[in-house]
Length: 152
View 1 (cartoon, helix red, strand yellow):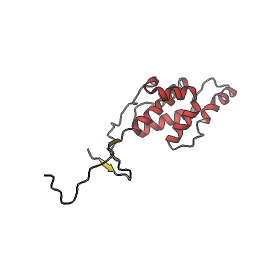
View 2: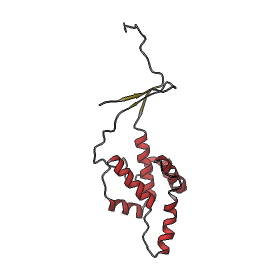
View 3: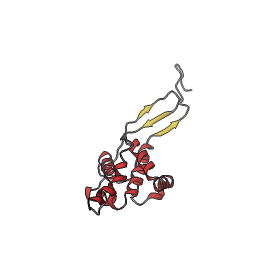
View 4: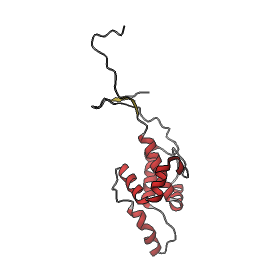
């Protein structure tokens, strides 16, 4: 397996290995495994808009995009539609599945975001953290070979 060494000015060496995830990977944690990351779970529970904005920024999207999820219930109820699908959570979930080859279906994504959008946001957050932490820091002070050193 090929790896890439990324030197930095601070002396930290980061070894990155290419993702070798199978094309039919699963989520790193289940939809209802919110307590695996208690801090994220509490953050989402007590300040869901803040969590959604943080996730949106992590994905490189407009941080105010999750406002659509907050406005959707009112708009749908005015139209007489008794179903609530969080459009941004649904979009981000589908994006994550496609980007990382996570198996699933559009129908399942719709059901999950319709009945437990908070769990979907937490699952996306856990998956982003898991993927972000895939780089490993090996050494704070790398050893370099001196010219002419024989190692004896």
